[in-house]
Length: 142
Picture 1: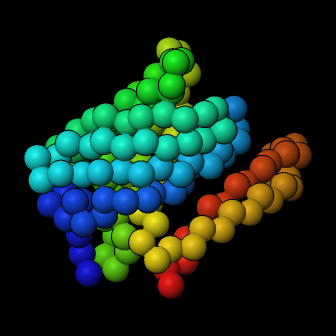
Picture 2: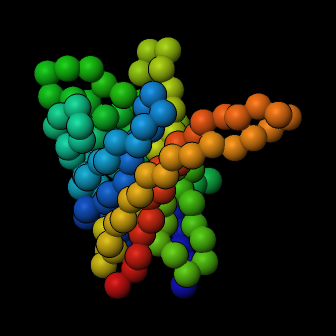
Picture 3: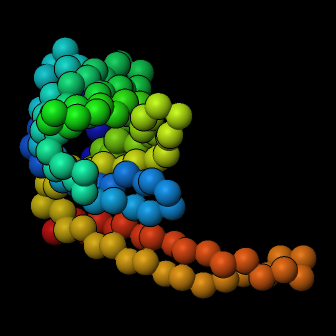
């Protein structure tokens, strides 16, 4: 099955994913509501605290939303709705808070199980050893 922006209201409900900051992935669980006009609203929690969401999805699949933490700062999210044939849609892009910015990925929790794994190691290039850390976030559809 293939999806488009017009299908997003069908994915109103719980979404899961992560945002990256300082080289680490931080889990997010939130409730999104999408309407036919492209309005995004919702609420959720992450490692910082509780927040509300307001924003907009455009017909070209671009979106923006503001994550407003209760009694604290807000974070701007911008990106593109990704549609891969046979998969659920995903929201991916960059968040911005002042001069800080990094990536994020969110997927609907429609019969989905989320798995994460962190791998550490190194690689050699031009005679130099470089440390690396990979964080995998995988989704399995029931």
